[in-house]
Amino acid sequence: MDKLNYKYLLILLVFVCVNLFQHKDHISKDIQGIHVWRQTQTMWNVRNFARHDANILNPRLNAFNGEVDNLKRDEFPLMQWSIAMVQKVLGERIEIVRIIIFLLGVLSMFGMFLLFQLLFKNWLTSFIGAFLFQYSPIFFYYTINPLPDNLALCGGIWYIYFIKKYFDTLKNKDLILAGFSLLIATLAKLPFLMFSILSIVYFFGQIFKERKPTITHFKFAGIQLLMVSPALLWYAWVMPGWTNNPILYGILAGDFSMDKFWEILGYYASVTFPTELLSMPVWMLILMGIFNLLLNKYSLKWLWSLIIITFIYLIMQANAIGTVHDYYMFPFLPWLFVLVTAGVESFNSLSKYMKYPLFAICIWSACFTFEDTYSRYSLDRSILNRDFYVYSEELKTAAPRDARCIIMNDKSKYIYSYSIDKMGYIFRDDHLPIKWVDGMVRHAKVRYMYSDSEKMNNNPELKKYIDHVIMTKGSITVFKLKVPD
Image 1 (cartoon, rainbow, N blue to C red):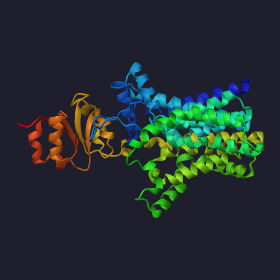
Image 2: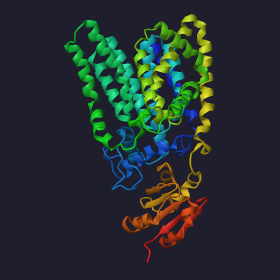
Image 3: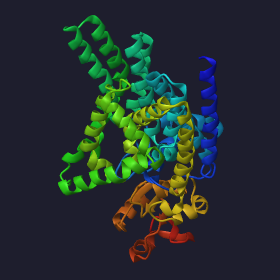
Image 4: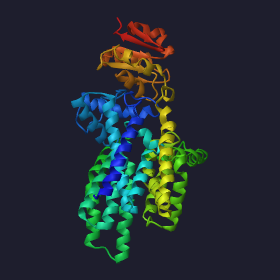
């Protein structure tokens, strides 16, 4: 790297520190706010790797309902396992988790920085593009929150960078690094395999250009297929156990109507894209980027395949994504901010003085996104009974940490038990037949029950299983259970 490169890289790292400072109020907060459901599910993987079973092939959750054990294999838990191994050394602190996720976000931003330089050959443009990327509201919020989507996005960004670099250099090193990055992205989240469309289009484009396939073409395809094969083998192994997973059915699910479909697409157009993936400060820039894409001013023709495949994914998975799972939209971020940065480059090329309004847009973006996302960590934005958050420390001490407990009412199955740090049997909607209580007390040796269900707490049939009330905190009562005489 020359001196100019280091200058912009150093400035970018300074603003990374500013970004971290903007998150300072939330670094020490336990999981709360928007999307605690998926975050606590992730953290149960981390806890169980750190405490009970460090085998990366055995991701465990918190619930034993109807199961022999608490194994649940979804995405390959590389991120969760890695965090747990760090916790084994440094201790189980939420600050450690959030800092690791933040560093993963820094790696993603640095990948975008290099991608922009590869595309636009302008370090100032690349710096501004990377700066604006880190202030995408959805990226800014999740950049300290534990979701495997963060690792998938990071791997996906580096795959795009290395595969584009390979197209320019034809060096095997870049091809192998692209394959490795795609492997990481796919292991972390299967949908990110869609990014391989860049390789697929290139493969068939080269064959069409040269009129016939050659050994070089098959080497290109073979290396990438070999690199990503561990992820394909993992999903071939675990997907048969994904019963009732909406991802498998998408818009083909029987309960999905066209009215709902159009409602969801309207939400994406009016909310998700303009205010969650992007923000007001970059609207003009992305419009300029779209104009440049249509003119192919910066040789962005390759971007069309990525745009098309992500929209196919969005349409097919609209039912699963709905209007809630905004982190499922991470695959859109790379190409959206390539277009934003194309808009930046257009501004830069007009005059050397245009960098000043661009700097103003950067400051506006940093302030706007910070203000827009700050309240997302609030308890008021957390779902379900807030007493489980407010009294979590007292509730944790009511029973031994590893004691299996009955917990209700938790429709998420993860949030309450995470807050009180207990595993066991999770129920919802005031539904817990007494014969189930009898079975858990007698055969599963359950001796504690956390309940915010007045209906259950006042059930006269429950009394013979109650030894005594340990504590009541807000709407939550903790019972010591016994085998009835």
